[in-house]
Length: 243
Length: 80
Image (tube, rainbow over all chains, first blue to last red; front, side):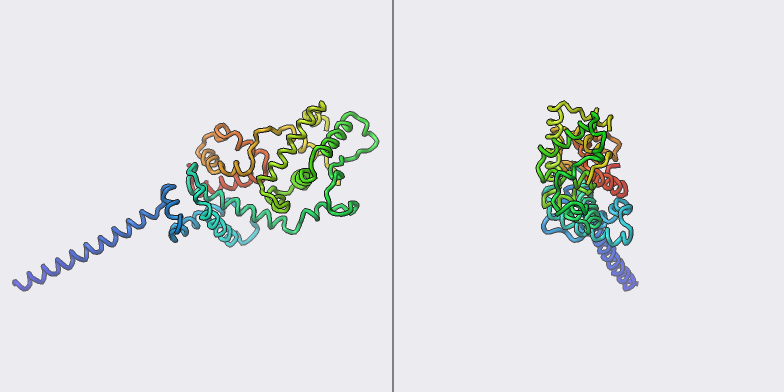
């Protein structure tokens, strides 16, 4: 009888030990999972800062892939999954590289997502325009010699017999202002962006400047033209109505 | 190469709309995720951040990226 009780007590102790062991294991697992839910910006930044936690990187990659699919599907003809995975990988490297510039003005995931979206769309723009270089566009008119973009680009449609009308005179004046006031670089940028309809990303890369610098270049050109047109009494509103 | 009337109109419109305080692509990008979150939360980011909205109206690349970002954040249910 005593022996039986003794065995039962030993069983009980063994069971209790097992229970405590399982409980502890689960508690640690749960704690680990909770720690990896990255609910706050601080948690994301901490786990992705040097050295980045592998699980956090995997989590972020999954987020990026999930967001990129609906963001890019209409631009990608085939193999969306593969493309999105490649973009997510490239974006991850950029995100980790510039994580110290995250200022917490939005959720971390939104911040990371915008980097990935820009990465993906830039790649698609490059692919779309990869076979067309600025030189090709400039030299696309067989009548034009060489690949330099010149003021001929800003000639107007049909400067024919009725070019003495008021609006034609105005247009000629505007073309004259463009010719005189803008640098060759500004003319080239405006031609590619506004006439050829090329994306800013592609033009900037082909001209060897940043996208921001290109925008500023064209902004300065527009501002200059606006001032000069005003000084010569040309009202853009009137011109638009007449065209 | 000659300019079509439509291109000319676009150019003149762009000149007419030019303002000295426009922000560039970098400043727009810096504020884009916050702008997108406000938009998805049904707030009016164009009122709080008018220069970002102004840049998006002018810059096709940034506008495309903003629209794609909205789709991504909707999927991730961020800002809602």
